[in-house]
Length: 115
Image 1 (cartoon, one colour):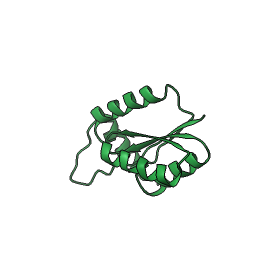
Image 2 (spheres, helix red, strand yellow; image 1 turned 30 degrees about the vertical axis):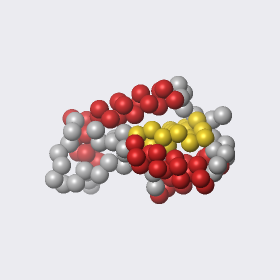
Image 3 (cartoon, rainbow, N blue to C red; image 1 turned 90 degrees about the horizontal axis):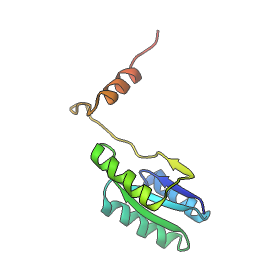
Image 4 (cartoon, rainbow, N blue to C red; image 1 turned 180 degrees about the vertical axis):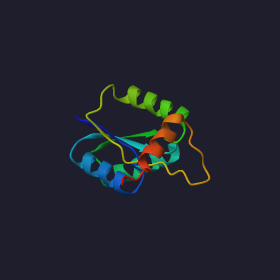
């Protein structure tokens, strides 16, 4: 059985993608920002696609400590992934400062305009 991790799978496009993959017989790790959201999405997905294999994983991708925890959960459930679908996004409003030097570098390279 193929295994996919879909980030941001608690609603919208991520949830629909997880549902579709489950319908095709994939094992889907359903990522949510927190445990309650991930488990809630898995319950709804399992009701929609009863024979599918959905498993919750969680972690706020804006917090490195939680990203590490998410990686540990994924490794415990699936030593290898066939698909990683990065659907989740992190919104940092103008009032928030970057958490790492790499995010500051990324932000500066993506906001440059070419002539």
